[in-house]
Image (cartoon, rainbow, N blue to C red; front, side, top):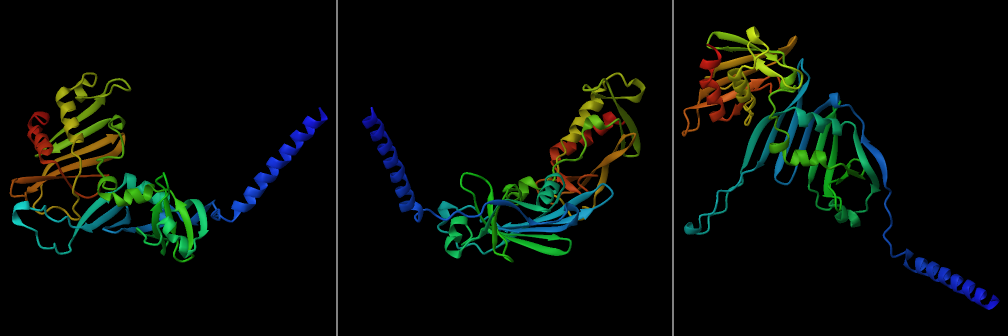
Length: 336
């Protein structure tokens, strides 16, 4: 019995000694762990952000803060390399396309505001310290993917953008002034890198239709007021004289208005614009407005183009012609 117990003790000691030996043998072969702690890359408030500039390998996106009585909005621009024309296989090899860029101006509100809020203050998921240059490639910093510059309170803050983290969408970044490297949430970089689909404001209003109590339509010198009737959760558009009965004509018309999604913004009023419709929305106090105008088309395949402006878009933006034409054609039935 004692012999068996002694043997067991010796075997246990042997296993422990072997494990210790392996740990010592391999200790120097393991990469040195980097410091990984949460940190603030820079302080600030969203209200103090004046400008955001993202420069990637084939695009540059900038957002400039503006404000009015409603709140903050952002005038943006996207510059990117022009897409070369498609290759015609019957024409032989085309000559090299000259370098060219396209520029698109736009207004950003909802997503742009969340982007700015994520940058001031800028919080890091992890602080990695100063990465030696012989390890920069591991983090995508040997050949950076771009830069991010944020102007806060008159001071410029800059980051060099590295690669994404393994198996995730977070981003390695380095602050060039200090050499400190961080991991930050990658959402802001994704929004900037896909500005044409993420940052361009497509919503007409910041409120929901259910919040509206009245709408006044004004077109061609004629006016009409419609109201929201029905129980909570089942609201409908109605005539004030019969607020308990749904007006199908008004409901269909207002649904078409809601489908006027902004596409291409213009930085000044469209030349030669003609008023089509103005709508004033209210819920006791004013909620906002919608203006629809038409202008002579620059597209040779069309005779007219339509633009919309609301309290949210601030500037005019082109809307799909077919939907806008339906709105204009229905004015005769809604404004009798």
